[in-house]
Image (cartoon, rainbow, N blue to C red; front, side, top):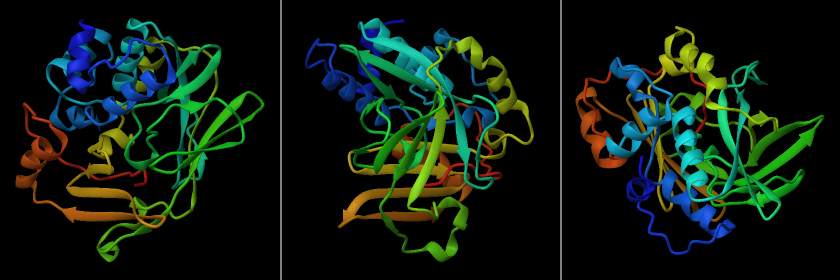
Length: 290
């Protein structure tokens, strides 16, 4: 595995060798704009492998994306390779339909320490819940970013990530399932602890989410990729584009239903993905909001 190949994959030309917040931010932003969050292998009859070697080949060599167990694992490796102090963490994702966090740890995220100061770094959460900058590990502080205002709160050793989002203008909202849209201005995203984890801690989670008929990952094919001004998403056959702050404190959200024969071209053009086997798009149990 070659760090230069990773930098080429995310389009990052090293402007500095400093292990500082600016470098960390630049790498995070390059990754979320080059590597999609996606689970399409599940819906192409192929496994989502966890080993670092398989992840590197899949994302860097084959120019695909992945879910958090792959994408943040790759980021962990890259940051460690260049000298950052990085710790894997595990989180429980909030489900808007049930109004509660998952009972088990299902999300992999990172903690990066720079000169004694700790930051939360995550390159693998779909749609506008994705941070664009590392978050200071500070409780109760609003941290404004382009997608939304993020905030972390801590209680009894558990940290909670949430955000305050802008209003949304949806021109064709009447044709879209309301579950796609967050109904509240304040959105809960996930909880986590600071207990160090390894990729092996997620083996059972990976197996469950690829095989269980009740898993959101087996019920829904999804893809999400950020741009300089917003985010593109594909959920089943529904193509979504969200432009952040397209006018004063309002996000523009546009939906388009694709024909199945259009999906392959859209994946190539919008997300840079070329599939080797046929995708069977699905939109079943929906956990994430736009």
